[in-house]
Length: 168
Image 1 (spheres, rainbow, N blue to C red):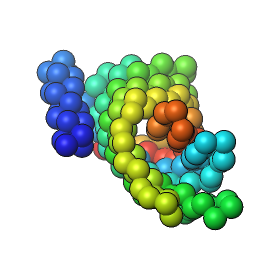
Image 2 (image 1 turned 135 degrees about the vertical axis):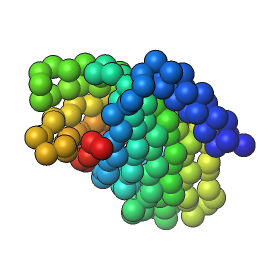
Image 3 (image 1 turned 180 degrees about the horizontal axis):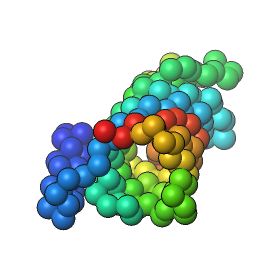
């Protein structure tokens, strides 16, 4: 049910943004996440492979949807943790620093599923991040960002994504 609500919210946001701009610049990206899942006071390395699709409606704003998949687990003292997957939608304010470099923020919702050998957890939370991108001449942007996917009393998931996006 929460995924349906997230998609519905994304659709409404996209519909409102598209009404303001007739032709958004579309892009897709792939990145590798060097994420860490903290359970209690124990940290686990939980890398992800991430795919994104977005639309840039003007030089200072984009909307983006992401899907990430866990590509490794970590264990300590018999406790294993892995990110199974996550789904996120973001508003992306952008500040161009030059013709090549931009900094941006990510503000949205993420639903994250983690697997452990003691049970699974699937929950959504406010997600945020900050990043920097460099525009190359061939329609490709390189980016690095910090992202927080999930944060509650006992579990925190966050880290660095490094990747490339292609403008369509």
